Length: 293
Image (cartoon, rainbow, N blue to C red; front, top):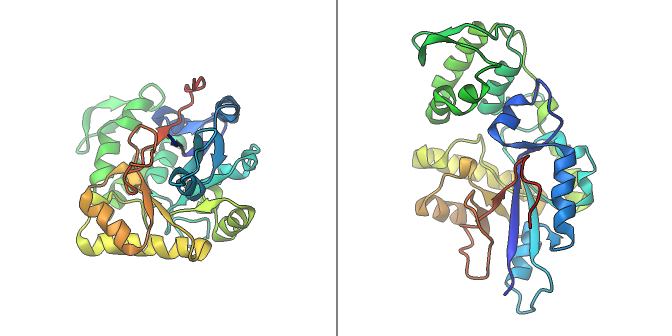
């Protein structure tokens, strides 16, 4: 039986002060690990873009090797480095957070940048926020990345997020954060990648969890995302990736109604011919995940 393995990556980068949170969260792998993972798979699978994989998955012709699509969420610029172009990629940029100067950082990248660039790193007090006791950054980075501050930001309104990030900027004594151009692919770069043969999909307009939005907000997120993808894909099949993996049947139906042809989740597994088009599972690729046998 034909099957499609969909790999989920975010960043491929070297560990340093500006990437520490991504490695702690599990959303970054080193170039060495990335290439080891794909080289290990290269003898076992056929690498394809997601739309190629979906077409072959549902072909009546039996495939000699399992299919494998390499997906990257959020549109980080790291894919321009480290010889990643050796493989066909499927990219999921966030429509309002591209590398153009007028855009802003995704809120989670802004938060991580504050932690990375904090001048005050020890004895931090968050009275009125989440903890009455002093907290260090370097000794408690997992708490910052996976604990109550991160959880609050995930569920907060844009106004609440802005207020908290402003407050943290003052508490942590941060003078500047990276520009979008330093982190994200621009439209021009996405066009270049699409021309090369990589595939551009949708990942929402602002990386909000779609399940927490009103119907009007949901439609705005999906339509803006679809319009961005249409610039690169035209009449070709278009895929979507649920921000933070949050979806339900209503969300899936709305994604389909806007015009997307299939959608990726963060659920673990292989896609097979009977897998629902808007519930495609993936394999979350982490830095300690090298042997894929």
